[in-house]
Length: 349
Image 1 (tube, rainbow, N blue to C red):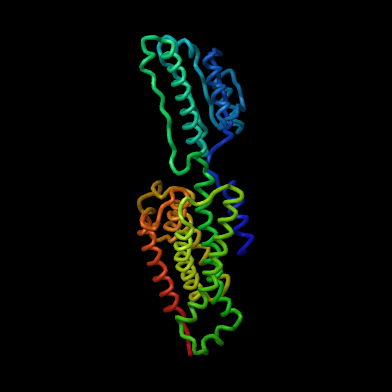
Image 2: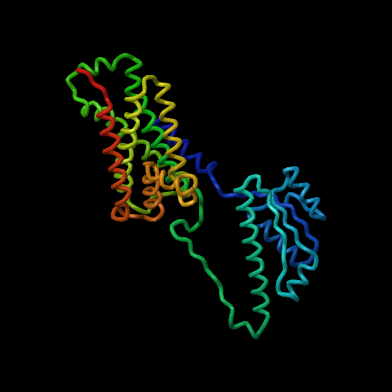
């Protein structure tokens, strides 16, 4: 669990937990069959996002392809498309998306609309170039993408997946610790020793603190070797915040262990909270897209703050001075959960 799980998680999860939509099946209805319509179809198919799954003579035929789940989106080019572009300086096309999968339908339509808009801009540029009167007014837009210039979704996911692995290991293992001693009958031997509760809880936390550093180091190595991803900021900053997170989340696991009576009960309780924390942390979906009540609840997820830290240090190179709020919140979580773990541990001497 300590070595193989983080290795496989960081290696495989970024490849499958990817919200980029590619290989969208497109049904094309070309009612114009002109040079411009063929150029548009060629531009769409060469974008890398779409593959032509059906070429129909009419919209009902293309719709049948969608109903048979062979196509996801229909692009219908109307008659006189090229003529309208040349004479009227404008033309319309129809985009119809299968919205059973809302993400695929919405993003696919946006991609297609963007490609058509780019095609229109290229045509207008050709007209402007061909006209001496407007040749001096031509300009170009060169976009710049900061922090992730290649727009790779993997770079966005890998730091968050590191946090997920830390949470799974440094949360579940402590949760099974004390309750495991209850099940084995060794907790009574602990209770009759002169060790106080604070020292006992601290001794339970230290191994998982070390495990957290080992797991994080394995994740760094895998991200560097297989994805070429290295942090823009300081590794010391990441380890500092990781130490706080592991301390707080391991303390939370010990709280669960103190209240659980069986291993099965501890696992179910921890699974519930870890899954909730992950979904509310912004790992998969931006917190700003959540309902307002969910955004308030996300403030109680320790994963939210450590994900912010890793993404900002990895991609933006943020320093400690820019991460004061996550540091203060994680410190508060560490004090709260570990204090709760000490208080809730019922030691009888």
